[in-house]
Length: 262
Ligand code: GCO
Ligand code: CA
Image (tube, rainbow, N blue to C red; front, side, top):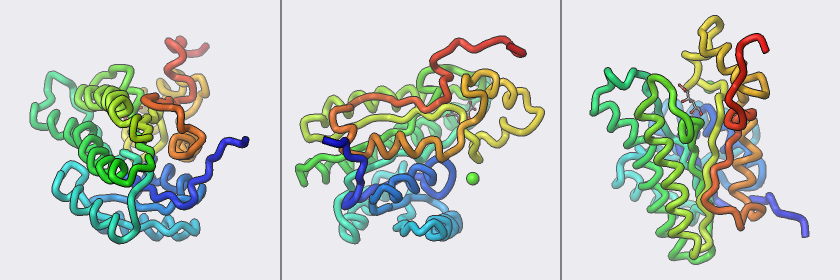
């Protein structure tokens, strides 16, 4: 039997899907048949995003809510369920980064990053799992992790702590919800050309050359490079895969790196 990557009849919610990696993954899910629900928290960005999806023939159903606000998450998911039905596929993509040396990082900023990048995926996953368990036919949760789920780097202490935590949350939720036929996996993007990395990607910034040299593929990832992994982990083709992080990194984690010029 051919493995199925078909998402027809499924409802997918992608958080933080108004731009960047979230948008690229959301497009891929829709192109494979899913009904697409997008979350964002800025009305103007949301309007632009809906138009961008439409320009590619994709209907995106927009829901504005703050993923770190439990009440807002509960109310919005209930609304989505009334409007469209139970969410089958959740991509916890919304996240934020702050690049500040650990010695200067305020505890309140640290907490804010952990709240968005780690606590929010828990809140949204729990709410959606409650409905999936009630319905009883399973579903898919995909947590967007990072290179920083595995590696440290100067200036990203809170982000790395949160993304490392998200990897373990993935394994833990996979453990607890496997019996309901819910698969919880993660995608760990390497270094991608997005707005988030724009400040460290500018020509002449030492980090730009560093990443290109550090990545066996020799380039930054394009958001579209994530589509295949998202579709795979959302589809029946991955039904016996649970608690894994699939790194889409051009080979970074496979290697210690190489000296410049090699
Ligand atoms: C950084 C980058 C990373 C990436 C990504 C790597 O400052 O090192 O922004 O954090 O965004 O998550 O996988
Ligand atoms: Ca962009």
